[in-house]
Amino acid sequence: MNTAIMSSEQVVDNDEELVYTIDEALTVLGFGRFQALVLAYAGLGAMAEAMEVMILSFIGPSVKAEWGLSSGQESLITTVVFAGMLIGAYAWGIISDNYGRRMGLLSIAVVTSIFAILSVFAPNYISLVIFRMVVGIGLGGGPVYSSWFLEFVPMQNRGMWMVVFSTFWTIGTIFEASLAWIIMPRLGWRWLLALSSVPCLAAFILYFFTVESPRYLYLKGRTSDAQNVLKKMASINSTELPSGILVSDKMSELDEELTTSENTELLSTMGNKSTSSNSGFSSLFTLLSSTLIKTTLLMWVIYFANSFLYYGVVLMTSEFSSRQSKCGAIVIHSNQLTDSSLYQNVFITSFAELPGLILSAILVDKVGRRISLVLMYAFSFIFLLPLMLHQNELLTTSLLFGARMCLIGTYTVAGIYCPELYPTSIRTTGVGVASAVGRIAGMICPYVAVELVSGCHQMAAISLFEAVMILSGTSVLLFKVETKGRQLNDIVAVHN
Figure (spheres, rainbow, N blue to C red):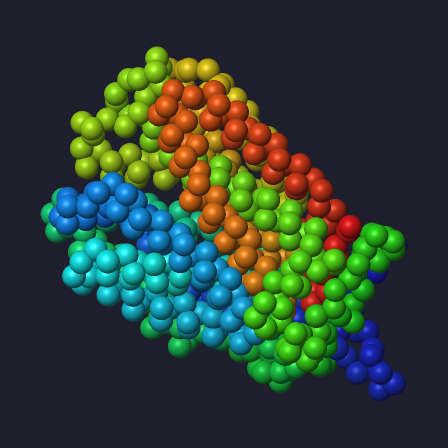
């Protein structure tokens, strides 16, 4: 028999005082106006990140022509951004887990907005590379936005709302392609950088209206502050908090499956112990501890695979859909493609992600995180399989469209599953390090997607992508914990 979460009618002492947990409070408060405002701000951060990443597709050729750069120098502008994101993903996780989600949000907004503006006025190539690398460090804070939003959402439909949050990334990519289409031919790359920095500036200005996560506040022993935030949420949502006092989710037992398994280890991260233990490298050591190492390594495989597959398919779409024929039916970039065609193609292919997000929203709270991931890896495998052999242009485009639709789904669901698995005290660090591992894949996948395909090795490229899908799907199946409908406890259960 499953043990129910402690309700407000249960007692904790001889006075039979009524109590409630944060998850019970969030359930009663529901998803209302307050959460919508939190979603808007977190979504703005995701949109800003997407625009600053997408801009790399457009400014490189113009900067190269203006300053007479080599191809290697042009590529370095992109590489340093991803290198910065590697650093930022870990650094912002540490700051957010030790000094608060709001401190992480402020640091990210300050760094990103200042150096995005400085990039506009870069006098030479070296300064542009330095400024864009620091922008990349700021962009590495994406997991802080997602974790902060996650901690305000009721558990009953958390997956669906996290998918809605993910749509802001797609909106950002579409908006950036539209902006480049309009601005680049008329005003040039500096104006595109300037206008693309507006969401970063807006995130900095609106930061002062944000509040700290009540779950984080309670974890740090600031119970009265946590209750004040919950009261503010109730007021804005026009609802009432449960009767009684706020207590720890640790006082609630997990369900029978987790509590009775001999192979289950529990990591408690409550109270002041976590305050002093999770600074600097100790957070990474916690992720690699005997309790969490299986979760961490499997999640690294999934994040690496998702980035490798997603960016690889995006690049292969460009390779396969160009106009110049080579290697039989394989096609590569044509020098005759106009800038307008480039912007138009990026704009159109970005819409492949919208049905993928809809599919994720349907599946994630219906069948769970694990089954959703496995299904979408399987569909992606099926879509890419015919491309082992040369296909006509229409079929090739359709298959790649389907693969991208499913892969944005795996990206999105993994982004929900990962922060749900980690405890509050190291949540943003865990997601941040996994994201950093994914950035490494994003840096190396062009050597497969572009070099193998343009080198007339289409079968080898597709075979490698299929193997990565099998590996990532198998990794998902090795997880024993399903987080659908489960509260975000400060205790993580991991099966070894």
